[in-house]
Length: 164
Image (cartoon, helix red, strand yellow):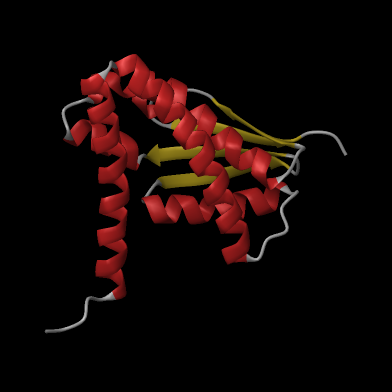
């Protein structure tokens, strides 16, 4: 029997990661309520994003503290989770991440739960991106604007460096 390819292993782990997220959410929702599952999901993503950001800094050997480092870390996240995105950089202290394809929205659509997407995006996305920004530096901030989940043609995440 042939050993699995690195690509097959990556796909296996990616599917396990997203399946675990969706399954635990649905179990909590079934046992309690959608609101309770969403509140717990928000807490989990706040912690997970910190862990992911720290690991991204280690893997990419980034010091943090700069918008460039945050963008490099997020590039790893976006590649691993299969986002389609681009970065616009109008100023040195500001970047606009434009997400044109979101794996989490695709999963909600595939599972027939697209009607929940806007509510989930308003709660989870700001928690996720803000945790990444904080982990990369105290002067970094993230703000989530309109999203695909709310029916916009793309998501807008603004990343800024504040102060000296």
